[in-house]
Length: 227
Image (cartoon, rainbow, N blue to C red):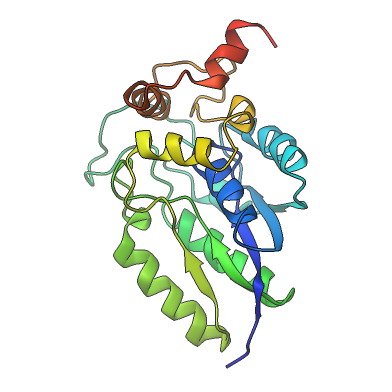
């Protein structure tokens, strides 16, 4: 099995609240951290601007990879023409579920990491306060890590620091690691709006987390200031 550099890490980085928290978490654990974002035809492509801004604030190299396959697949509210809603589709999943998205992202990230001698792959998925996506569950990520290790004969380590945290606990973790200022530039809104729409499931979950943490959302404050 190929031994990769244990002091190196790549953060799968959307530019959202969770991945920003993970980026600042990673900076305190690894000496070599890079951020990898994906342009996959998402409705909220504005998040890529947030990712670039936050990576620069954190002093972390940032790469954007294109994955146009999801536009071809369609049939969901994030890459197709369906309106974002809190309603469940006929399969019982939210209509914002993009089939295979995290599996593709993490497989790509592992291949990218392999070619750069990077051992640690970090993703902000969580099954505690998650949106009902099966590719955010711990059993999925455990199985995927083993598949990546076997499929590339490399000693990857897949980290999910938010897996068992509520959104409120995630807010506190960002604060603990110095990421609160960066969250002012993060993007969560599924409708791709700034100021955030406040109505989509992602906006509501974010607002709930900040409220329960007793912390003012710096993104909302920035929007109110018109910055």
